[in-house]
Image (cartoon, rainbow, N blue to C red):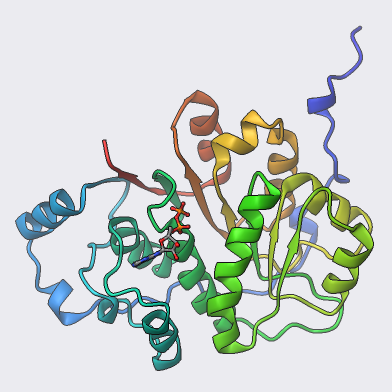
Length: 275
Ligand code: ADP
């Protein structure tokens, strides 16, 4: 008998979700704006054509055309204005209402499309609605990204908007100091941005845990796979409560990504930007 392949070994100990008492949580924060509610099917089709987004999946929300349609509070709108964003990008126009509705998403978009903010903003709304962290609690929002560079980019965007609500964001990536990262986590962080291997290390070191994660993002999933992180990504997904909201982004949509999407997403809305 061949020894088990490395990828078949779960890096984290087996978890039985049925034995854990998870508290119920809310994931729908979307109130459709009257202007958007008034759009008929043909207008929605036309708007999606103009935006260059294709949308499939069960009953996706309509896209929007301005930041005012997101229903953000005054503080967040102010931060968006301060960032000098005047209009949602196409992926934001469709993905933000979808994510705010609590839906899972598989997003296919190129870099530079503005997808970071498309998941950060709904994540902030989600985090702000949950009970405050208690000492020893792990994050509510978790974002996995393939590289140190990308994690830091996401971290900066999350900090920029997270500071509106005084949220703590911590970034954990391979190659950085485990000691420093675990110290930062022990202070409590509502949001963690991490590379998959380092996130596993942090959980194993008990610097944090996945029990409170209810909003999970897998960014550049195809690159995480190319870098050999599939077992770590799958392990983390399996250790997060099954009724979480999960958003997955990828530049391509090949068989492996499709399989992951099937395994980790529930009734996802599929949003494809560009051709
Ligand atoms: P992606 O994650 O799709 O590669 P980013 O989210 O990093 O792309 O966005 C690319 C750049 O566009 C960033 O500098 C970001 O600050 C900026 N950006 C994001 N949303 C908007 C917007 N609505 N209007 C103008 N600029 C934006």
